[in-house]
Length: 611
Ligand code: M6R
Image 1 (cartoon, rainbow, N blue to C red):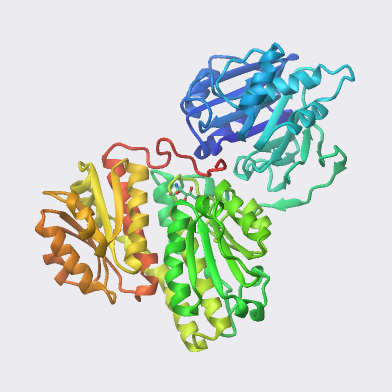
Image 2: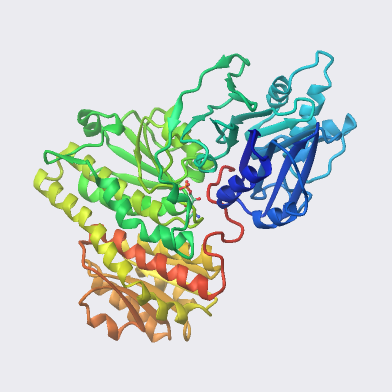
């Protein structure tokens, strides 16, 4: 959440900052601002709303600046407003700070700063940092900006990625981090800092990812990193191999649709090279088959959509590998006392790889002695770096706030993991594993078929668009899929939606149903198909408007449902891969018909780096 970008060099800083902020906007978009250093002073311009509004305002100025920092915000402390937008400055306006994260002890720090005469202009936690740096710079020992930032951050509790300017060190940007990502890089024109690689990919493919408590000093001609003791260090270069079009819409009207259409490629890339000589291999997990064979309990921990991928995987791990598997929301897991032994495997699933709750749960599990795998989409992310082994989902950069292709990448990766565990345990034969793997690969083509019939969802979307609430139901795999369908719909269309295991409907939610109430059912052919039909009868009898996701060739379903969206036949275990695609398309179509911004839904941000 929140995007940070900074530049110092020979180019116009404003242009680079705006370009970077536009790329980072998916991380937060309630306000944006820049601080530009010009002729020994710092000019700050902020606007409520999107980066576009900031760009419009800046077009009325003629700043000639070659050094600056910028920010796009997702509000935590203080409502979205111009006053709360970053950059925040010191009393004298000579220090400017942009921040990603949360300062947990800001209230106490603020009280002390006010008592010492500092005046605050915003409700944010971040502003304390500008005042603390200002205070540190007043020290008679005449510290550098780096030393002042280091001193200021010593008293901070919480998470931060920071970029700081001081008008007395023109052309210098100091950056640092703790529990919040910061990357730095250079091109022939100067030095860059950002909270996400995506803001730098036009400038350079070779970036340095700072570790916690490391600092970087950027000047037009140099980029030097430092450890906590401010000793110079060399941080290894990470080369980014994403195609730049990952950050462009590529002819699609929005990122969400583009990303939905990338899913067949994601499936193929995630599976490429995994079956060698008839055996599954995931070398990056760095766990021998013997060690895998000892695993006797699995916890899958995640948030949001990633949690739904975990719900799907639980079924597969238990059915195929016969290992008890629990799925937990990371924000709960971290405060529980789960039973963890050295033979417990904890899998942390996070698209961004930086979700605060998932990361905290992962760390906790490691401290308790579990072996931890990460499943993430972001190379070098904290989840990747802090896990014992990692599977990358190969979705490439996902920009739309609503996860689609990374979700599918997670489901495919977890399916692989379930097969790998079954292989190690010997609970499936190698023939069964090869067949399942082949069918998994085939889902790429089946998803292509679904996408070629995208228009199928339109009548259902029209039927649902004026509703105030909707119910998603399914059984078995369908119950897990329906959870994701409901989340997708509510997050981008603001239509309230709930998901229930269909058998539970009669225990409460059925009271919601009256004439025209949308019930979206996962009614694909499965061992529980007939049971789902009974549940549809119950809903129909009460006037529900039924939209069914059904298997091609199923004519019977038409007598139960008002709208049917057909998908190709796959085995039940793989149905989440195909059945979730029409639900993504349906959510998008409803959202568009309700006039919503599908890429940047209100109140949300792409990565949630605060608790
Ligand atoms: O990056 P993560 O996978 O850890 O993110 C978890 C959730 O915040 C995320 O899935 C969220 O629910 C999305 N908005 C879903 O579309």
